[in-house]
Length: 495
Ligand SMILES: [Zn+2]
Image (tube, rainbow, N blue to C red; front, side, top):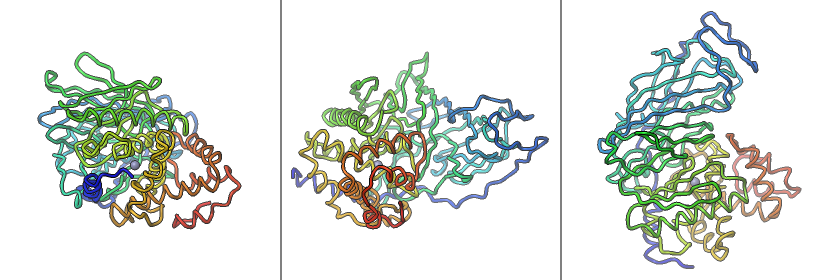
């Protein structure tokens, strides 16, 4: 055990944080359906849909494409955005509405829509309620067809006030005195699964959003180029004449963090550039986070499957949390403060955890609100896989300090809404989840366990999977009976 008393105390304080979204959970709005087929009879789903009077046929896309032009006024904390979404209807059904998440609208006065058009024609047939924008289409969008939504809006960023962590969740979106964070900042079409648009209410802790994979091209310009900050972002960057262009394909989200104080360290792993962004005086922590991410990308690449992008940004966040986005994650400033030069600390295992989300979230996505364990249990257990591969002497320390310190209890498969507080929620979904995976591995053996993880990754890659998929893919990998473990750890029956 290498736990410093001071560290333990400080950790107790930071780990007591009970997240509470400052956003008001909204009622589910009633969408307005203005769309009526004009002269066209909606066609049944076909592979090559017939063009309609109002839609120019566009080759079918594999994923939605987002093109954003953002002008950031760093000192005024405002962003003006011109966004174009090419959305392919891959639902298998015709659509007469699109549901778009506008998460910044959860903060009063933060999101101001100035224009919206569908296939080039301005529209007024939309309704906004909290984080939800329903756009009624003037004619049906047949299965397989592509529609173009253009949106113009401005964001007035809220001050990301870090309140008593016992009362309020760490705030990411917004600005602090030394950082500007754009997370879930642009409108995106939410997944449509079996005819249902998936946009859950925010909650006091945990993540509530579910994402389809999409391609992003984001052009960022600062109003005053002379004082432009250092930018960390999802995707590869390319310098243009007076802006920077970031591109990333098959990503769940596009995040950006800017600060005039960032220092940067980078390393190359194969063709992936991994960069660590940190505030001055935290060089040691910044390097350690980079090192852990480099090792994790190698370990997980071998154990699960390839890392999908050409870059990965690790960003010191001016708030008390770690958080994953595509090719990008935050680590709390507190982890850097507590970093003691060893690998037995929060900075290391949370860096491994957030890197693991580049597999269990970014590639194999799931419903973060209703089945949060599907990515979180695997991300937590991936910390163990990191330690056993790189620091095997610390595995038992990790179980004691990271997991069993909290005496985790509860069923693994709870929605965020049933968590009864941040700590009981993470105890169940993350830590009991890690225990379940350990027992499963002991039961079926290493060979079957890792073959299953590879298969699960391969089958789930690019998709939104469910708990049923997890067990369906697991089943053929072993003849061992693990039904008692499922009964012990889960409230639902899975086979
Ligand atoms: Zn996580």
